[in-house]
Length: 333
Image 1 (cartoon, rainbow, N blue to C red):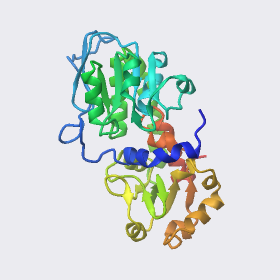
Image 2: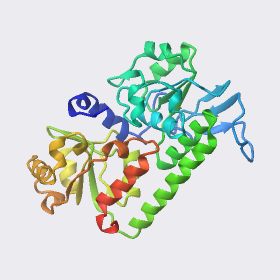
Image 3: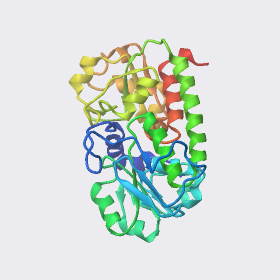
Image 4: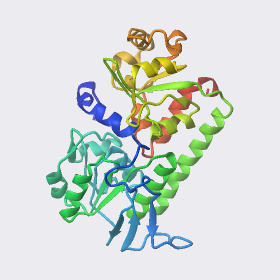
């Protein structure tokens, strides 16, 4: 499924808020203090080769979820959840996804149950799932989760706040699907690639970096304070310039901060900004931006990997690698 700007535009602000707000005060299904690290109960010193059902798991919203048997029909309410299921070799179990899902390609053939960022509960029920994997922190509204549960369906909520949280969620879904060994392999590969990035950028001076998630008529969204995106930027060797909890950055705050580097995540959706010269001239033409250090020094970089960078699933490592190359090109061949 090709991604085109007209289709993405109505959803982009909602997606910005969802991604940049990770790490903000938890609401809805999250318990006070934010979601706990996913765990499985009962626990043992050494997990068995495969989970024994019935199995009780604790999800990212602190909810205990008991699976009577290994789920065979799964509905995913977020693209990152879909990618986790497929990375574990269980794509064939998906019976419902979002209309924004695009990876792996075969998921585009699955019936969408989330349309224009809105969950169609009737479609969810019609898919007859034995497990629904939702997104926390109101990305899947609490009211929708409660409605689905009231209809007798089982819901597991995922909401990773950090890269470690992504690892934990992959392992959690691996337990739920009876594929813990596959989860361990996925996480092990991710950890090795992350270590390589950290080694590459070690000792480099972190530039104050504005990651542009969305911009329109003076409104700029970037990484939210304490957000998942901000944590990934730090791992990639940047000092992230953050907005408020939702990622909104005021024009005066932007000018006062005076970033050294601007990464245009918006170039992933706007072909015009993919051209470096056009990107720089466009940014320089915005009110007040021409005097920013990054613009004066020509450090405005079209960033074309926004989806893998802002989607907290197995491909987040690809986003981390791309960020590190964009921030410290001298550290990579």
